[in-house]
Length: 362
Image (cartoon, rainbow, N blue to C red; front, top):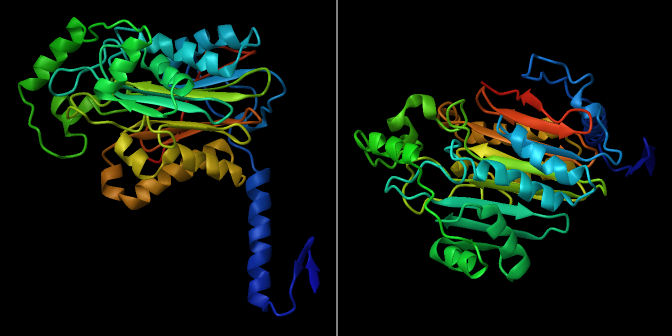
C-alpha cells in the first residue's frame, strides 16, 4: 500500500489512476484556497476595502438581498439583526419593505398583473433548522412572505397555492386588499393593445417593451434575502409578483424551495432572480449551496449554476436574465448572472448601504 499526501493508494492502481488522483487533490486545494476578486460598489465605485471572500463571519450579523431596492429591505432587516434578533425575523421584516411599496412593480402591492389583470404573488421562507413554507398564486394579500411563514409554523405542509392559500391567509387574520394599483392597471391595459398569447418564453415582457425583460434596470423582478444573525444562524426569504403579464396560474421559482431559495445552516444559503422556469429546471439555489458544500466560494458556485443554464440552452440564455446570490457560513458573499445589470445589496456592521455590481457571462 502506497501513501501519497496522506491518502493510501492500492498497488494495483495504474500510473494514470495515481496521476488523476493527484490532479483532483490539487484542484480541491486550489478551489478551497482561492479568493474572489474584489467587487465594485455602485455608489461612487467605492471599494469594499478587501475581497469579499476575505470577510469571515465572527459574530457580526450580515444581510444581503437582490437589486437596488434591497438596500431599503436590508435596512429593515438590520434593525432586528443589530439587536441580536433572529435571522428569520430579519428576512421577513426586510422583504416586507418591497412587498408594501406601490412603486415596485415586481414585488407585492403594485406588482404588474398577469395577462388577465390579476395580481398573483409567490413567496417562500426557510429557517436555520431547515423548516420552510411557501405560497404560490396568492391574491389579495399584501405580505405573502408572512403567509408563507404561517404555512411553515402553523401547518404540516410546505406549499399552499391559489384559493387555498388565500383561505388560509384569511383564517390567520390577514386582510384582503386590492393589490392592483392605478399605475399597474394602466400599464397592463397598454400592454393589452399588442398582446399576443404565444407560448414563447418571456414573450409577455417582450411584447410590452424589450427594455422590460426580467432582471434589467426597469424590471427588477424578485427580491431574495439571506441573513446571518449574531448567533451565527442563517435564514432566507424570497418574494415576488412574478413575471409581468404571465398566463394566469403561472408560478416561477420564487416559492419553490431549492429553486428560488435554499438554506443549509451548516453551509450557507442561496437565492435567485430572473426567469424562474430556467432556475426550476436546474434546481438553482440548491445547486449553489451544494457546490459551496464541495468547497466552491459563493461567486464560483453562482457562476457554475449560471453556466448550467447556458450549457443546456445556449440560444435561450442569450435572451433572458438569471442571477444567483449566495452567502456562506463564514460571511463570504458572491453573485453571478447571465446578463449585465444584476446588482445586490449588502448590509453589515461597517456599512448598511452597499450596492454591488454582479459579474456576468455576457
